[in-house]
Length: 65
Image (cartoon, rainbow, N blue to C red; front, top):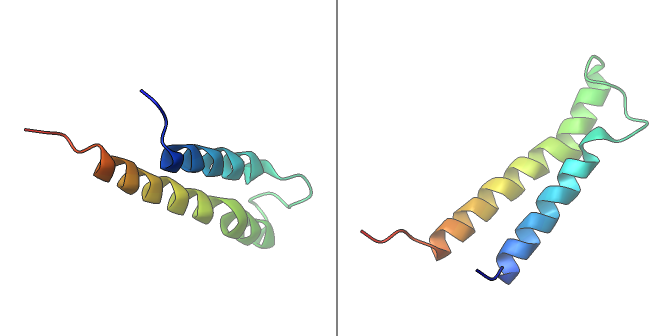
């Protein structure tokens, strides 16, 4: 099975945001400012990327009854 352009883009963005999840220099989760920075920079974009990619891929490969 060959990867489509959408799947490659989805995989790239997911890996990028996952790698950015543990940025050095940002305070840990025990600090409120660090929690907001982690959420804004990595967690929310990662969730959006994963669910949008799942929607697009599953729309392309629908299961037949």
